[in-house]
Length: 136
Image 1 (cartoon, helix red, strand yellow):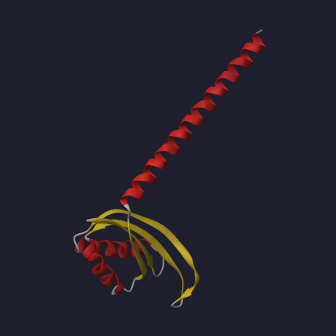
Image 2 (cartoon, rainbow, N blue to C red):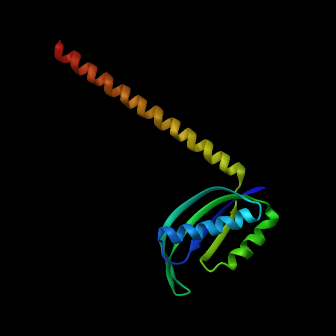
Image 3 (spheres, helix red, strand yellow):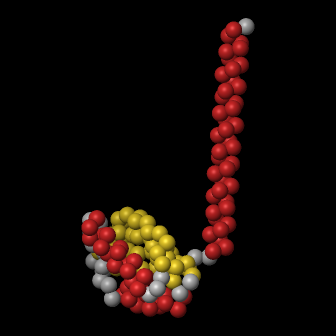
């Protein structure tokens, strides 16, 4: 099983009930082909740079899933039959790159926490020096 990111553009309105049914239908196609859903992110309604097929905008959704690589072509074929899915793009996730990005993000958070702690310590020392100078 390999990990994939699927970017879906759903045609129509961004109403919650309708959108939830459309997303669930896309997720069911993945599970029907023995895939597993890792996460689903609704990115919101966005306007297209230029109208496509008489449509001005669509609702973007990112679904991260695991699927057998041999089943990807079958999945995209099934999505072509669903009218609610305006466009779909499926990209393979490079696990090594994802691990490097996660490590870099963790290092960045650690540096920011250390910087915040140093600033707080400097503020406390400055406040103590001000109180010592006032009492003297």
